[in-house]
Image 1 (tube, one colour):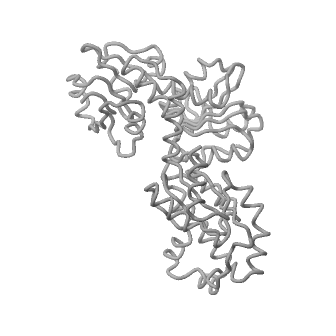
Image 2 (cartoon, rainbow, N blue to C red):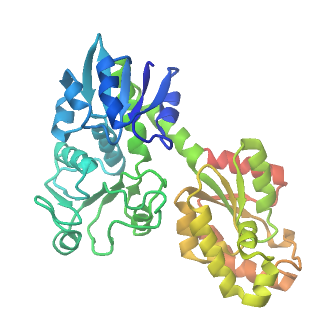
Image 3 (cartoon, one colour):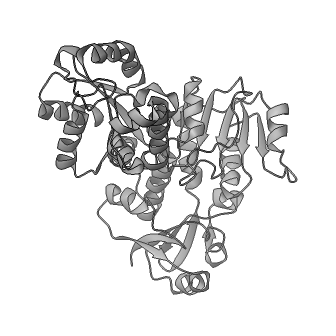
Length: 413
């Protein structure tokens, strides 16, 4: 083996994808139990490796030299074999620093609140210190020595300028949880969350709703992988290429979420996109029918619209929001609830297919758009919502093939 990632459970790792975009070299996942790590390191049969949980401290006694930043953090995530000697680095530091700099140019004079007291918290503390933070507060559940409790953080440190979440709160599969309530933090200038699955955590989305610049951890993950490759090959990678790699990864992972009026072509366009891109397609209405065991018209007739909307929200939250790299065709009224939009945005970019009312076709199987007057009423009620909740708007008056082409072009910008 030449290059790879050492860890215990690696099935969901993004590292091979990142390194495949960096360069043409053999990069493998090395899953080892704790009893096998010592032998692997003593053999030294590799050129360089990344290291992930739970071995970032385990590898340290086997290294010949450790960088000062890795020593300060107390963890190593990159090991390079140079003529039989092992050199250890921590590129999590570089990745988190790059993420923060993406949000705010400097921490000089800023009060930084870090959520969590584990290994990643130590990295965040080192980064904040190196970037000139005026004050660094660490919050933990128990409020152990050197930290405050979450309640104390909200009561005594709600004047924090920057918030960094280093906890797994909001991470898949528990994607609807949040580490803290943001309402009390009235002075926040930026929020960084190390969680990268989902692409945008509930915490990130709530910050953005308040107009606070916020990002999840995929940028950090990508940049630390790029820095690791620089150590691998002793060669600097241009920032333009680094940003291009990040854009490629997020485009691959992000869902294409299609919204619009009934009969605007969401499912048809979605099927064309699926065939052309290889992405799987999920139709929210079809998922509702499967869960309910009956057609939507029957749900409306027997249970009413409120019941249907509750079922729709449950399907979006539980089945659709966790998806990545998919195409999602929503029902015409999915945009009516803010919670649906937020959940669709966790891993998706929302594309509104804007088809003129004159081109929409009422049908009897659509309970809220069964005739022209009903369709017109819904169009007038919803149009501004479609516009306001979309990230991209495409002209739906074109052919389905042309609309699909427009979606691809806009989505990949």
